[in-house]
Image (tube, rainbow, N blue to C red):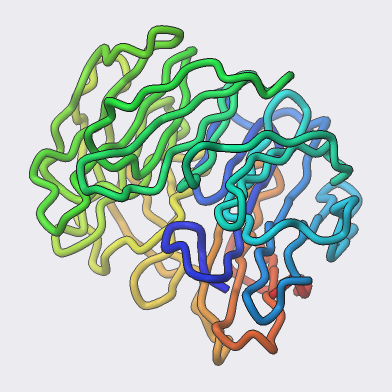
Length: 345
């Protein structure tokens, strides 16, 4: 099992919902401190199985308020091969299927199948904003990525943009606008940028050229974007979404690998670094602190999110050994292990 970004034969994805959290990225409809108790507060793990374990394609579920875990809640028991993305919109779950016939499946929040549509291109990533679901296509060419938007209610096509002539590495939503990280799919990424797109026409309203390798973005406690870059620069940028200008930056001692997640109450973001560590970045003090180390032999970190309300770290571990189940581990704010649950392959 691996994480969604690398698209191997088996995948683990992670969806945490309080206001709205998605996969390795976070997308909130309310950008305020978590001083309230979320009415709906659950974690979902998408288990894609493998060619050797096709019957392990399902959705694991953790009810955060009740502290109850279920290894599989999908109503039809086994998802089609291979699911590679999960999102939440309009009080339902959406799962993208990348192999066999590419499709988008809709279930209720309990995992009961509702409907599906065929996709004309294999999906690369899956997001949601407001009452819309967004897919990006697999980049068959280094300068081509199709952005498709569907209504969450009836799954009807809402908008299609084939003119994203760069690779979409992450998307977030703020004040009814989409913010997308774009880069050439090559080692230099000299024209990489953050763009703001306004529905419904989806014209590009602004662009911040980064000239780096941006991989992920998240909204911090001040409503600003933090952008994580991989590679030798090891840079983290803070960006004002109103002016589309950088307001701060910090260079990490060890480069970003995956999964950027913000503490909505403090000037802190967490991420998985190269070397399989969960790192805490205080963006005000510009300090980097290792919080969690991967001590699971034969496993790698494939998904991660920090829950700002209960102040816990949710980490998914997966193994290339298809005989081993994946693991969901829950840690307290300081990185002490509290719970371990088996997921799918």
